[in-house]
Image (cartoon, rainbow, N blue to C red):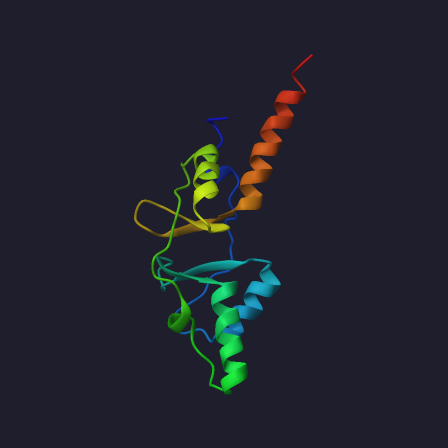
Length: 139
C-alpha cells in the first residue's frame, strides 16, 4: 500500500476560484461541481487561499439577515491552506485526515502551483480498491 500515491487518485480538474469572484458565483460552482470547497488561485494557478461551503454559508446567512451587498471570495477565503504533494502517499494522507478536519486537500507542486484536489472519498476509494485487489489473491 506504500505505493499508492496522491497523483493516481486526485481530481486534476477541480473547481477553483479567484479572489475577485462574487460569492454567489463561487457557490454556483461548488454546487455544480459537487465539491465541498476549493482552492483560490491567482492568474498563474498558484494557491493563495481556500473557500469552503461553510465560509459561503456563513456569509450568505449574514447577507440574508442584514440585507448586505455581495462579498467577494477574497473577503471570505482562508489564507492558511493545508495542501499535499502529488508524490505523497495515500496512507500518509489518510492518517493526516484522521487528525485534520479538511475533507478536501489541494494538491500542489513543490512551488505551490495547483495540480488538482483530493478528497476523503478519493482516499477511501483508493484504500478500498487496494484492499479488494489483495482479497482476490487470497485463497
